[in-house]
Structures are given as C-alpha cells and as structure tokens.
Length: 327
Image 1 (cartoon, rainbow, N blue to C red):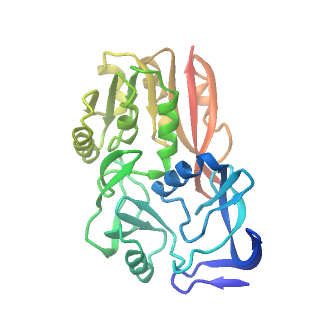
Image 2: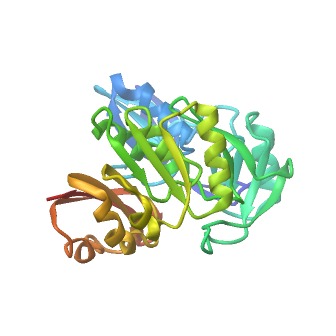
Image 3: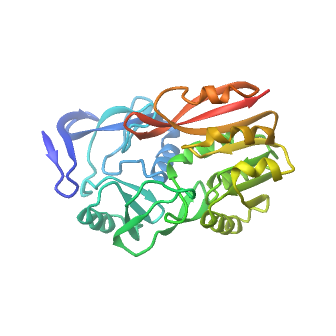
C-alpha cells in the first residue's frame, strides 16, 4: 500500500510484515545495525544529530538492534519497522537544539512540528545556501519565536548557536568524537575554521592547548561565549584569516583540523608548516568521486593518507575527510 502523508506530502510504502513473531503494519526505512550493548549510546547519538526516525520503533534482530534513520548513512540498510502509535509522520527537518530547520517551505508542516515536539521553540526554512566569506545562511521563521539562536547539547558540551551568524551542523557529532578518540593526552591542536567551537571545545577535553581561528566575527563572538560557558581555559580564540596563520603563530601543532568542506585543500600549503613531523591533519571536502583532492595532498611530504566517508550531502555528492599523517 502507498501512503501519502497529508501534512508533509511525503510518500511511504506501508505493508503487513511478520515482525517479532506477529503480523503487523510496517514501513520500510533506512536503518543502522549495531550490537545490542551499543544500542542505547548509538540511539542517543543519532537523536542528538537529528538523524533518528522517532516515528518508528527500533527492533532487535539476533544480537543486534536496528535503529531507523532519516537518511542513508554510511553502512545503512533498508528494514521494516512498526510505526509508533499516535506520532504523526513529520516533514523532513534537521534538529539543532530548540530549532528545527525544514527542507521545504511548508508553514502547515512547521506548525505540526512545533506542536509535536515540546523541545522546539522555532522552525526555520533556509532561504539561501551557505554563502560568502563568512559561510552564513539566510533563514525565514516558519513557526515559533522570531530567532535563529538556540542552545545545543552534544556529549555534555553546551554550545550557544546562532544559525544566521555562523554555520553549524550537528551531523559531525560522531566525527568529533572519532578525532577525540584518536588523540593522545596533552596534544597541541589547531582548529583553522573553528566556527562557534564544536571541534575546538570537544578536543580541548584531551588537548594541552587548542588554538581556534575563524575569520567570521559573529562566529568568534559565539566561540568566546562558548569557551567561557565550558570553562575551557586551554582554548585560545583567534579572529584571523586561516591563510595567514602560518605567518603569525609561533607554535607547531600535533593535530590540525581543517573543516572547510568547500575549500580546505587550498589551505594545505599554510597548514603543513604549522604541523609537527609525524603530526596529523584532518582535511574535509565535499566531493563527487573518491580521492578527489588526493592529488592536492600528495604534493606535500605525507607519510600516509586515509580517506573516510563522513555523510551524504546531496545526490552524487558526499562529505569526506582525509586523515593525513606527515613524514
């Protein structure tokens, strides 16, 4: 049976399936398969990123749990799930703290979102892509309070966010934890495109020192606020153009984060002199084919490069990270 949700206009395939030993109405959806003992931690992580499909019930299969997700994440598969009774199918959106960012300009859907999710105070629609030197977007308020500012919590870290002042994505939460797990204690870290500080403040939990730079004054104001909020005395905010950092910083770093997906490769010539021999750079890119920026990386004295899929960005395009180890 094809079911079209009247609120969002989205189409779903609904069928009768035998789940957990019973014939029940089910819906096909993308899901991630994790061991049962890791299920709760993964569910919480997906929920914080706005990727958990909360209209469907997770289900167990052998020694694994299948968690329904709203998009085809790396390693995702299709599965059948029972709908959660009483929860309407909501329009497509991304959750950032108390703000929902919708993919469609749908005021009725926005009102439904606001009424269904008590934690929300605002529903926005982006009127532009990320644009300009400061990488900002323009938004229209579809429902709720007239604001683009919210508080966002990620693995215990509280961040003040203003979506119109500085770009922010919760989709890199897992990536931030991955890099934190790779670090040694007391590393010297440089975040070249720090924004409001999600990478810098996450990594400050292990680092001895973090230099966090951004050229956007709105982002740096929020970064300073978030450093104070986190009491991160080992993070130094820098209002600076990343291309000039190698001319002014007197330090060498063990690890450098280059999260500027539309142009980070162009800053490698300035980043590599700031990295110690044997140090690591994490260079992010939006790309259409595997190894797209590898020729740019191999111009430099690197010992090892590992490319990793981070997330889908748009049809035929994805967010990748290159973990680069220097000679």
